[in-house]
Image 1 (spheres, rainbow, N blue to C red):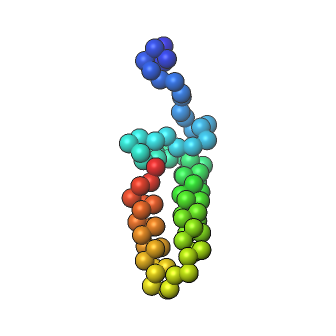
Image 2: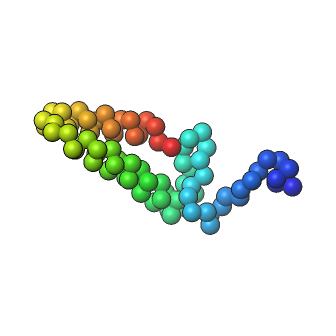
Length: 77
């Protein structure tokens, strides 16, 4: 019945990650929220590590970090 309607996966509290709706995570339990935040932290660390390798001044680093934070939080998916 579900597959005939185009539904190929079931999502509930036992799922490992939060369901996504319009590119936004909808956490229904704490483990979904924690998984989402862990994934977000990995993205932030990766972006920061890439830019730390460039010998930037303090102002340059602040600009890059602000840009990274804005980009990550505006494009959360």
